[in-house]
Length: 130
Image (cartoon, rainbow, N blue to C red; front, side, top):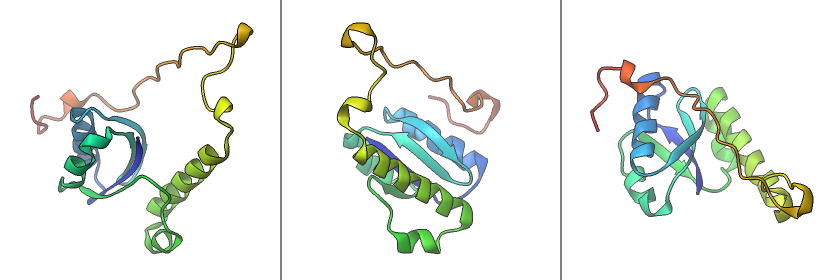
């Protein structure tokens, strides 16, 4: 399930720690919005574990209320609005158009792997070993 994750601090180090935690529970970061916002695919069975982590300020699976967007800092408000637009587009798109493009014969191509956008984590010596 895709989730909008807001961190308690807005530092690159905390973002790297949070990404590592998401990956350890079987999730996959999809987008990083500096400062302190991660859009990730996470397994629902680990949602409670992720919410209990002290690095995480909030996790949203649905649209974020306009009142909360209005109270947020400009960068976070931008990310929240983008999240809401993403959810609205996905909800309005016909189910046949959300997958991979059709090839001849009506079959779908397999999704392509996306190159990792994060820096190598072994360059930060303070990260825990797995």
